[in-house]
Amino acid sequence: MTASSLKEHSPEIAARQNAMGILAKASAQDLADVWSNLGLEPSYTVIRPAEIGLVMVRGRAGGTGAPFNMCEATVTRCVIALEDGTTGFGQALGRDKQKVLQAALVDALWQQPENRELIEAKILQHWQMLRGKLKTKHALKSPPPKWTSSPWYGENDMSTQTATSIFAKAPAPGFADPVHNAQSIFRSTMNALAQPGTVQQLDDLTLTPPAPLSVAATALVLTLCDYDTPLWLDPALAADESVKNYIRFHTAAPFVESPADAAFALVSNTKLLPAIASFSAGTAEYPDRSTTIILMVDELTEDTGVTLKGPGIKTEKQFSITPAPATFWQQMQDNSTLYPLGIDVIFAGANQVAGLPRSTKITGLEA
Image (cartoon, rainbow, N blue to C red):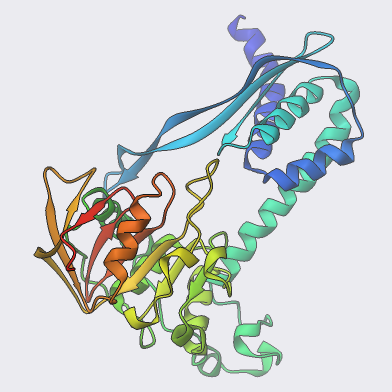
């Protein structure tokens, strides 16, 4: 293809890329709904069956935005061909083969002029829904203008309230520098999980969360949680409206009542930690859909306590937390036998974090 022909077709290529991006971002249920609404039953041949692989995720950090390899992500892709030879491609994060097959079919049908208008309408509807979610998240993270109404500030017309009365009801501030603070916390968290039992010191933060939230735990929640990460709070936190309002205001994370439904669990007191088995350990197809526990502790100590072995540890590493639940280490030892399933734990000290991933083996328990 010549440069002139590529330029001539670039609007169509861009439109197709946009449609494929929307299909990749859609949930399996959303895509199933779109497919059922199309009312099409094409004959097709599978050129490349849905297969699961890994891709490297690149990130940027620091003031210069220097790129680095952050982690690997699971991706599924599929290729099909319609009877007329039109080839459709589908790919998405995760392991849902049916979703990717449907995406490939929609992509192939989109390329047929007689079907494009119908598919564009359905895809654009989904795109509008995605944009609505993003706008809702942004609105919840930013104080509304004084001329609008918001449940955060009561049901009265904002025009009748003074600025002082409005902001007096707002939760305490979050990160002073959201981008760089979140990058720093995320980097420390990744280092903690990559090097189990190694205490990571956090940068000085000016957070003033409502008690009993610690600065470190709050920083983790603000960094890791958003509208798409269900969050479970221990009974003490769940009963505190100031805590819930603070987290809801700054993250928009939905609260769940069952530990098994949580992507993240925030525990303010080791005595309030439920049985580890009550949290989601993920599934064989989606081991990443397990719960990560953020556990607040008074002290994190290296070179004493239980012995840790496994990935990220050269030989072995001693580590302890204070206070430690009576059966916690035994439960985590049992948890490691589930690998690649299982939960991960991030310990939040005063201004420190440490990690205990599911891949870590635990020995040296007292009889």
